[in-house]
Image 1: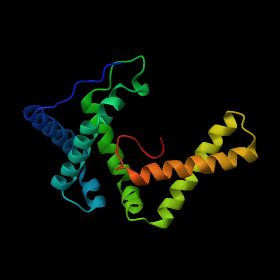
Image 2: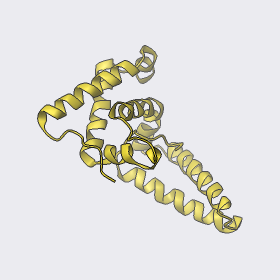
Image 3: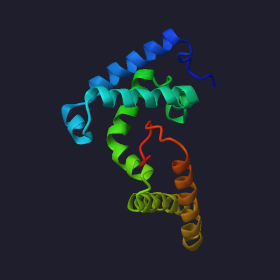
Length: 159
């Protein structure tokens, strides 16, 4: 499947940044600013940086053309930016705690991931005793990936 074409030159990149700023600025409320203790300009700049990194790495293109769009048209870039904004507003506190190596935040994430993995394994008819061990292994591997890569904010931890 072809990936959606996204900006590669400086004029197109400038357009991308303007689009991010417009989308993010429209989506961010005064309550969001108060909750995050920042200015609109700073929050929009941070979200724009995240989207730019996701575009540069190819992640944005994969997400827009990914399985969630199977059988449908590609996810529009504006919708992708909205997804990043919403996920950022929802997950930023947790991501900051994880980045600060907050043990309670990591423990909570591990429990969440292990629980989801356990339920999936049970649906796949893995015996409960084995499923517990494999779920812990999956959760540990996922935590390692999260720890070693910047969080893309185009998906929530719940997903």
